[in-house]
Amino acid sequence: MKKLASLLLSVILMVSLASCKGSVQDSRGESSSPNSRAGSLEGASGEEPGEPDPGSSQAGKTKSLVVYFSWSGNTEMAAQEIQRQTGAELFQIVPAQPYTEDYNALLDIARQEQKANARPEIAGSVENFGEFDVIYLGYPIWHGDMPRILYSFLDAYDCSGKTIAPFVTSGGSGLSGTVSTIQELEPGAVVSGGLSLGSSQVADSAWGLADEVEKWLDANGLQER
Ligand SMILES: Cc1cc2nc3c(=O)[nH]c(=O)nc-3n(C[C@H](O)[C@H](O)[C@H](O)COP(=O)(O)O)c2cc1C
Image (cartoon, rainbow, N blue to C red; front, side, top):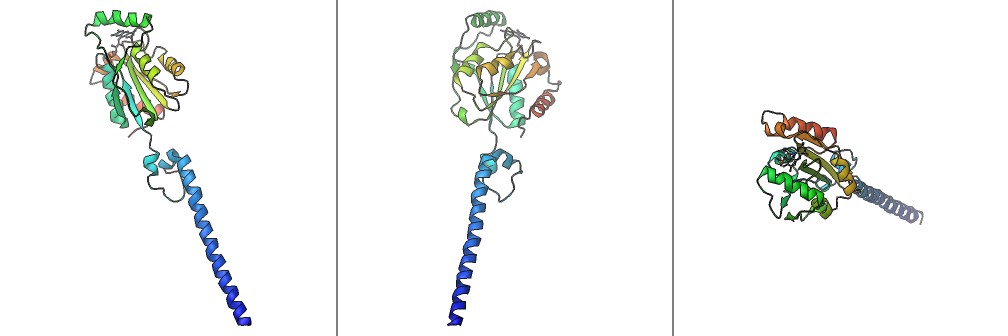
């Protein structure tokens, strides 16, 4: 009888030990996955301890888009350099009604658009805009401001929760207050410091465009490939 009792006791002990072990594994599993989801960006940089979460580096990867408007090609060169260094996708803002190719005529048209607070129509659209975390936004300075088509873009797309990184090319005016204009138009976005490039510098292939872009990305904690 005594033997039977001690046998029963050891069976109970073994069963309870096994279930204890199981509960430790479960709680580890449960706690690791919410952490890796909430901190997926941190996790991707290898700071997250614990079991590796397959696919977390993919899920946590920052997705970036370079959006730019360029009439004579300078801003386009900067956009392409940013794309090369970041691996971002590229979207060119193209007016539904093309601008004239005559510089002097364009000066007048741009001035009229500015006076009229115009919103020129954009040809095409970014279908998957919601997927992007960082928007590199590039434009030339026209009469001390963004071309009006940039206002059309910012009206059409909600950048809340995203980072906007503005970059401009100009004949010398620089950012011209456009960084704060963008912040006013997109109050839910974080707007980084802007990159200002001179038109003649960008057009000069011997000038260090790649270095300037790299310095700007670093200074603003923006993603590199
Ligand atoms: C309509 C128009 C207005 C401009 N206004 C300015 C200005 O106010 N300040 C300035 O520094 N450059 C001005 N520029 C020069 C452009 O900002 C500069 O050439 C820029 O690099 C052009 O970029 P893009 O080649 O991408 O079109 C103007 C150019 C145009 C066509």
